[in-house]
Image 1 (cartoon, rainbow, N blue to C red):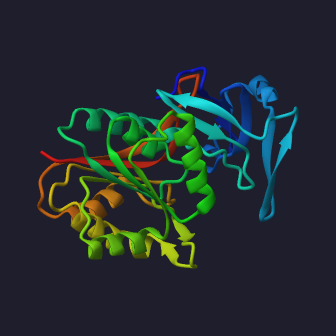
Image 2 (cartoon, helix red, strand yellow):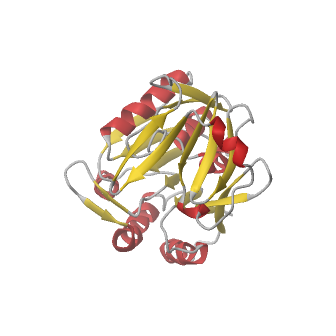
Length: 282
């Protein structure tokens, strides 16, 4: 997880969340906090910037000068943060537990594992895997996210790590890897509800996730060690995604854990933040 001086969820409620990323405190919308009372009204006055949505647009309103970018640390890795037009900062803190799990798994594995990271965003899982000694293929359809991830890699001292950087539609890339005969030991994926590839390819999780998982099973069929999947899609329960993943895995044994992702606030309350599924071979 994050050290307290790197990230904290200070409060949430009334459809918003208050977080401290390193030196800076940000207030953002949070659907999971709808209908929930805030615990500490005074804390909200500490926000350096607030993201406000009006109709279909949004913008940041700064109460003080903020740098164009700054960094936080997760273990030995460094993550660049900045305010984006969509209200994001380049980091989903709820994934830190997944990165810790991945690090432990890879460090305890024999040999060098080849890991495929799909919908890889700014590379938190890529950094964790590379720092643990894995060979990583990082795939995201957004060129700016891939460049962001590369900056994180350099900042983390992993510039010489074995990482391939791919800007491509995830389903298309996996299909090509199968034709090339490439193999992987594990897959990390965080599929969005809806998205577009760099050439206009449409991704819809309800339509395309089963096909993508089937292809990922083919890519890892020779020596599959793990699958790590997460989702923030509204309407899915952990049991729903568990069923989809089990269908793709077939009768291959192993252990599958499925449950909710959450961030613990400073007062101990848990903010629901998606779903995580972790499968490991016997």
